[in-house]
Length: 293
Image 1 (spheres, rainbow, N blue to C red):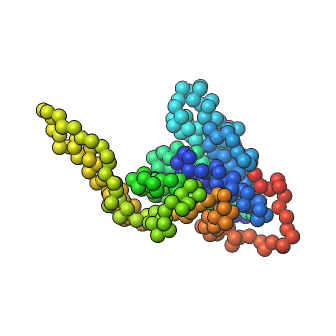
Image 2 (image 1 turned 90 degrees about the vertical axis):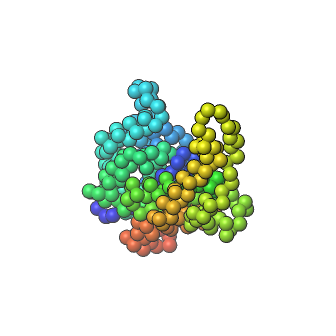
Image 3 (image 1 turned 180 degrees about the vertical axis):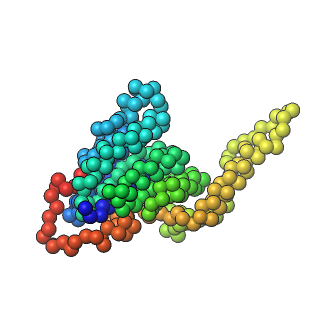
């Protein structure tokens, strides 16, 4: 069995992970490349392309919440723990996937899976070691509208860095939905977000909160919170941490622009060294529709 290649698509809820997976599949089809699409979100319902393997065939979040009386986050963690106990559901079909395929794994949006608990790292080890030995790249999506709120953007950047350190894979970070901010910011200013510039936190606007003095209490600490001084210090500390590691930079993604999708895919291909293992293709070689999820 030859090498296998894949990418795991991560990021917070609403970042556009499934939309990116669909755009990626369409781009691969347009370029006569094969892929194997896996959905690991036990709550996902609508897909532009039907997954080749869907975790809901094993377990669904709705059933777990109903039967075990768990909330969405607890139920999701239970689903992944159940998956780890039944890894054959995932590994056996992947044994049959050839090296010409790109395995695309669509993950749920609860970031604690990537930053707080060791579930995803355990899953990654199972896929990248042993008989599967998948050469894999993590793609972490962050919504580009975060740049409107600098503190929110750097919090998202910190979560991306945390995921990088947790999953221990070659990694690309992506600012998604760039079409939503197109024309709203000068290119020079946008570059400060693409290569996160912590000095952006130095000139943040004041919180706008109004402090009211009260008799008989210590007003000092409360006033500092209301003015945003404490939050400012926290934000600058987060920014300094990001700067010290110097790990995070972003690619720009507009899923409506095929060139943009292709550019992101080229970084993923380079990270997993996909093209180095491929046989040269004849110009008239075709890919069957069944080869693409």
